[in-house]
Amino acid sequence: MMRFRARVYVMLKQTVLDPQGSAVLRALGDLGYDGIHDVRIGKIVDLSVQAEDPDEARAKVEEIAKRLLANPVLEEFSVFLEPDAAQGV
Image (cartoon, rainbow, N blue to C red; front, side):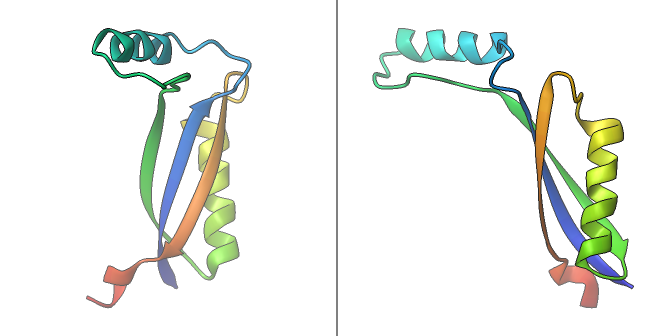
């Protein structure tokens, strides 16, 4: 078995209003920051996953994201996976 580090990015779909992002956008304008036209707020979830290979690890993390981390009606997610460098320690 190998260990992998997985990072899951969860964001509201582009068609869903983002009130937090809108508030940050207004605040940036109030603070004098020009040229910022859109702000979207999301979340990042880091996982350490044990699996036989990268495909199994990715499948496991995607299932977790679909079942627990993201609301499929409002949100979308992406998964980034890499071998866990600390596994040999």
